[in-house]
Image 1 (cartoon, one colour):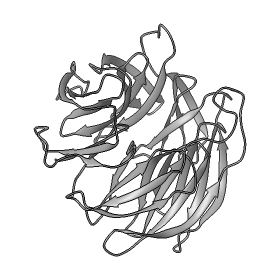
Image 2: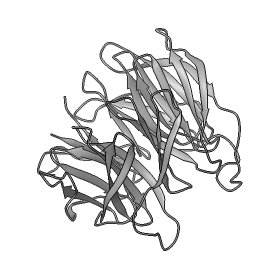
Image 3: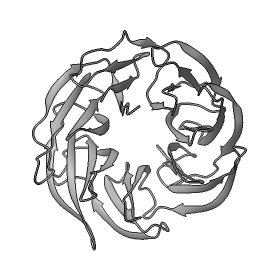
Image 4: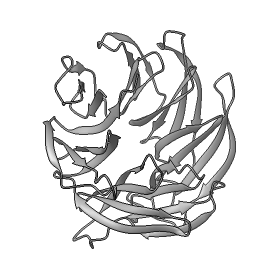
Length: 319
């Protein structure tokens, strides 16, 4: 399965199953996060003060660029074939874009501005939308600055209708990313508290666990979460410890079972690739692969498969 590597180095790259480049890097400003549309179009944020999103053909030709209406867009999500959403971290908003039939960007259809703050004056002085996730007609925006998950309904015309806001507890947790389990439960990585929380499908808090087994020497900031394909395991990245923690998903909650080095520094993002975890280690400029044990699903020690400037996202291309 080909894979895209996003970065802060003004380029994204495409590699094959053996991590050989399939094409020259595509030059574009700060493409820290990417998404692949149903027509194969690649979408890339420009994580700048004046945020942008661009669309590219699979071979890297620019199809168009639109402003996101906010600062430092850091995450993208597709809503079917018709809309693309972007989370603006610096200004705390969620933008919606209509897509043309060929997958190119048409226009911005909405911009939902968050408002609020929380207890950490250094990181939560205002809203900071960090991730946007789409499930059916529902959109869930994780806001680190507000200590909140903001829930919307997305209309057929691309308008976000506020449904509910979940306040994360305890305050100061700083939620970053969430992932849904097949049974409906929701797992949330709390960046500022170095924890992972479990919620019901209705976003009622069930449990909170430390995101690592090894006590951090300094700060530790969880990043991405991935659920195994069979739903038995949850993997959580740790920036600081520079590890992946494996949790068993039990009926009563998460059971920590292992923590292994990513083989690099500052694992900002990772993805599941054909029986392995592929990790973007931002500060060491490396992409590593951690093979998963066939029986237990626990990652084996990492090996470096790529040197890449400031890698920040690993996006599998399954079409």
